[in-house]
Length: 137
Image 1 (cartoon, helix red, strand yellow):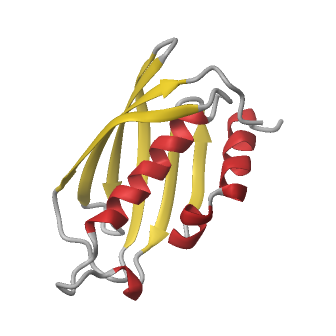
Image 2 (image 1 turned 180 degrees about the vertical axis):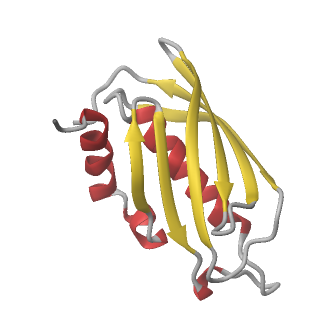
């Protein structure tokens, strides 16, 4: 049996050039949930020689988008925030897991945890989305 939530996210990934550039791999997609991973590359470091904070944010933002849109109801970010809890290194394999905590008619609330290959938490992201009522596919 095919996963209708995965079908929506596969469609999103097909057109999401930034997530493709990040090297995101889809691990699990369920209703209101996503789990994705990527490997941090050398070109992702900033002028201080450390991994740019936008990398963790972008990974979490993609997990957020896949979780809040997978019911095929176009949803856009209203508010997001991130807390960095551990330094990220080049070569780290990061996993982002997005869990829905509220699914309202017009809004949704999601918490995304990012861990490294040692299962150490490196960041926590919170996102609130607005549901437009339009279909993606």
